Length: 372
Ligand SMILES: Cc1cc2nc3c(=O)[nH]c(=O)nc-3n(C[C@H](O)[C@H](O)[C@H](O)COP(=O)(O)OP(=O)(O)OC[C@H]3O[C@@H](n4cnc5c(N)ncnc54)[C@H](O)[C@@H]3O)c2cc1C
Ligand code: SF4
Ligand code: SF4
Ligand code: SF4
Image (tube, rainbow, N blue to C red; front, side, top):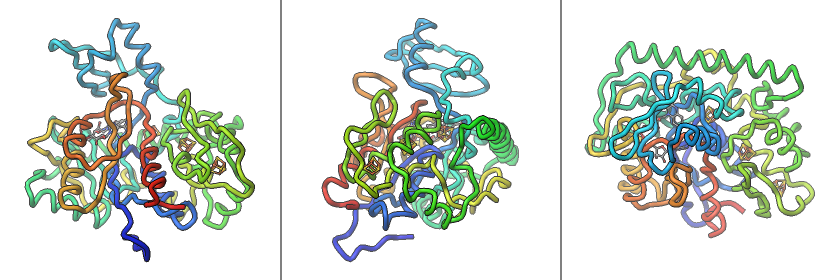
C-alpha cells in the first residue's frame, strides 16, 4: 500500500487513534486521488468501548469536588472510572453514573478494536501493565517485529481467557449498538455509515453533498466523532471546530463535496468496510499477543508510544500524530504532529475525550507536502 509520488518524496506519518479515527484514515487513503494524497502511512488503532464529552466530564467531576487539574491518570476499569489524583489520592465514579457524559456518536459505533488499522492496542485481555496487540497487516507485523528485535518492546502469548474476554466485549458492543442503530433509523435519524452500499452507490450518494448535508446528516443528529477529517480536506479551509462542532465560515464553491466524502460518518462502501466483518468480533487479523515497553510509563504497556518512537527512530515515518493534554486545560485532548521523541513520551496515556486528530495534518498540506 506504499504510495509513490513522481514529485518529491511525500511526507510519511504514523498515527494513533480510536476506531472511528482509523475508519476516517481508511477513507482518506482510499480516496486520496480525489481528496489529496494522504501522508498517513502507519495506523495504530486503539480499542475503544466508548468516549466521553470533555465538558460534561469536567462538570461531573466538579459535582464530586474534583478539579481536572488534580488528575494524574484516568482509567475505565471494572465498571468504574478511576481517577489517580495528586498527593497519592484515588477516586472512583461508577461507570453507570459517568455514562451520562458518554458521547452520543459512540452509541452507534460497532468497532471495538480498530478493525481497519495496521495493528490495534488495548488493555483488555492482558495482565496489568501489559497491552494487548492485534496485528492485522504485514506493515503492522513488520513494525512489531522490528520494535521487539531492537528491544523497544517485549511480547508474550495472549492468555486464552484474554482472547475470550476481548471477543465477548466486541460482540457486546456490536449487538447493543446495532440495536441503537436500528432504533435511530426507525425514527428518522439515519446512521449512514452503516448502510450497506457498493462503491458505485457511494459515488452516486455523495456526488452533490456539501457541508450543509454533512451538518444535517452527521453533526446535527449526534453522529459526529469530532475527528477533524473534514477540516483537513476542505480546499477553501472554511471549516473549523467550534463549541465542539464543525462549523463553516463562508460559502462552499459549486461542485465541492470533499468534506462529505472524507467523513467517517457519511456513507462507507463495502470496499472499505465489508459488512461481513460484523460476524467477526475482532475483524480480520494475523496474530494477537500481549506486549510491554518496560521503559515507558504508558496507559497500559506503553506499547503505542514505543511503536511510534521506534517508527521515528528507524525513519519509517517523518512525523507522528499524538494526543497530548492541553497546557491550560489539563486532560483536554490536543492533537500534535511531531518528530520529537520527548513529545511522544509526554503524550502517552489515554485521554477519555474526543480529539480532532487530523487537524494538525493541515500544516503539512499548507506547506505543500500534502494534497491540493
Ligand atoms: C477514548 C478511549 C477509550 C478506550 N477504551 C478502551 C476500552 O474500552 N478497552 C481497552 O482495552 N482499551 C481502551 N482504550 C485503549 C487504552 O486506554 C490504551 O490507549 C491502550 O491500551 C494503549 O495503551 P498503551 O500503554 O500501549 O498506550 P500509551 O503508550 O499510553 O499511548 C497512548 C496513545 O494514545 C493516544 N491517545 C490518547 N488519548 C487519545 C484520544 N482521545 N484519541 C486518540 N488517541 C489518543 C496518545 O497520543 C498515545 O500515543 C481506549 C482508548 C481511548 C483513547
Ligand atoms: S465513535 Fe466513540 S466508541 Fe466508537 S471509536 Fe469513536 S470514540 Fe470510540
Ligand atoms: S468547500 Fe467543500 S470541503 Fe469545504 S465545507 Fe464546502 S463542501 Fe465541504
Ligand atoms: S463531521 Fe467532520 S469532524 Fe465530524 S465525524 Fe465527520 S469528518 Fe469527523
